[in-house]
Length: 408
Image (cartoon, rainbow, N blue to C red; front, side, top):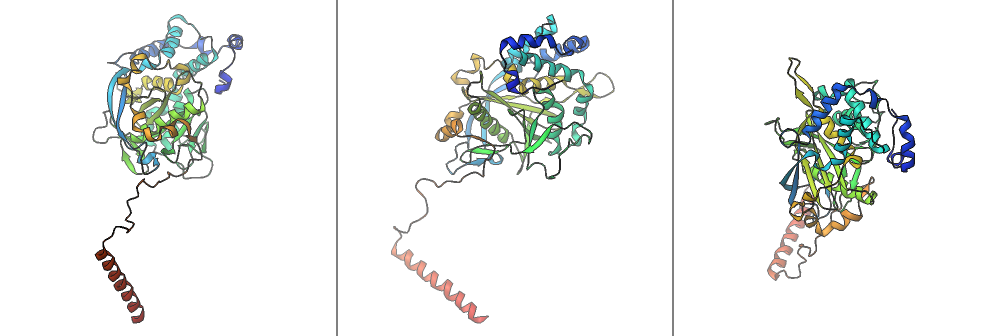
């Protein structure tokens, strides 16, 4: 199956119709039993009791506009609380409509983008060999895990399998290969994945897939691994999801700068562990931050074989990774003032930098700035007694130093 860039997919309507004569065989050959499976897991994404949900979050405090200067993602601080719960499919009505029409009526999308991203899902659903990698993710460390998942999950579901790995994440400088096997078709490259601005939040993403989706590594809370409390692995050890929230917010503002005419500005970032994932979305126009519930990669089976791949995780990944084509945008219920993340207020002093001065690549170390009204004592108001004390101490210190030199 061929790949397309975003430019390839954004073609005139007339050419889209011509391309329908060369339909991917998967639309005709997709097995009936997989259609039933797909329908069941899609239903889960539409049900708040059965599938993952999206929690709208509000900032109560953060260091996005720290007065002392820029802050690296590793040191980001975000105090957030959930304010509204929605089903996962709330922001993907367009994509759900496309898939449901295919499953129920055999209707194939007219547009090349929708048709192509649907074919990517169908191929992945039918490829049990590629899915099998998700059954044994615990064998990979925090360096190999995002590469394996980018190569065998997010990259397979995206319109392009190309992805960039943070060049500082991989210690070996020789040619990087997929950790699963020397013979695996590897589609990633090492590169500069830094985003942001030195005066605000900034730093590298672990991986950037298809130029518009970020992936970061997380570890589970060992005390309660079954809950939704995933922890992010970063340069300073285990912290909660502050780092990923900061990356998601910055990446969303950056994508809006790069693609100002996009029909929506909901941008995802994945947090992955060896057992599951969490997906964050930020919409930088209406200031809405969404966090998915924890979605495990594995699901129990009725047989004694143990576990199987959780296709809900596959579907959630497919929707998020192809957000540009499958997202229907924020519903009105999430655009109201009481559902906003309040990031604009938190970052008010530097919101102009987030909106207009972010960079993709070549982002340096955070810049530390002097505070207005420097607190260093200039000595102008020092009492005479303090001047005399300083003078005596100076003489003692340097007299002792000279005495010591003579005694050597």
